[in-house]
Image (cartoon, rainbow, N blue to C red; front, side, top):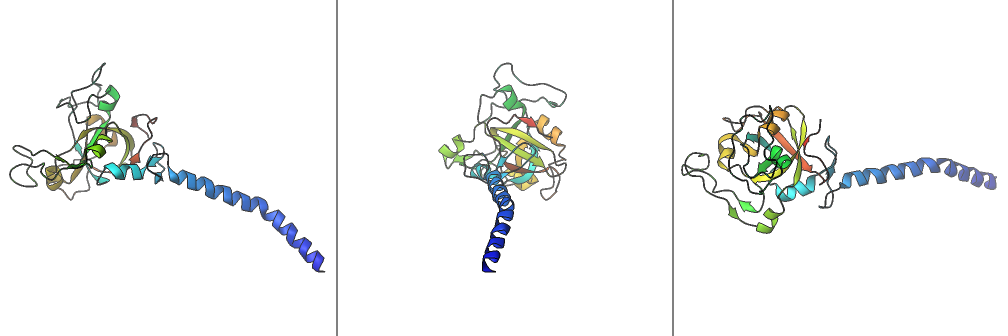
Length: 229
């Protein structure tokens, strides 16, 4: 009787082995997916643009949500020069940008925020934190080595209003801190980016939910810039 019971138990274990093996493989695959592909040790997040390295984004961006402001185009663009299309209006061009020169693709889909490595608290006018008029103060260096790692990083952002996602390129610093106090703005991008995302009006009310985006994480170097969905 004991021999029969032992034999029967062995059969049950053998029968369950494929199921157990399958569960182990599934757990391993899931863990690898979560680990991401970035160099920051994990925090991979699935997105329409591929796996986003959340931990990598947190290393260089102090706040991952907020309003997307409307920026002008950058001037220092390598040949063949600026992309110009129906979504480029207004085609006003400002300075070279913090991480110049830029390829056409980088300028086309550029992105800025108040990157870590600089103190942005003085970037307002003489009237106080919410003053964006008059001479604006300059940021001061706190960690130049960290700031230098930002240049041309690819970043995945998503509009909270429309759900659309896009891969953008770190090409500029700012906007000034006064835009946070005055409007609630943390980020900026040229017309091609905010028009694709379909974000609303970012200016006027700092507590408004309009134009809100979130940073999902860094994209791999091989990920193309531009819309994902």
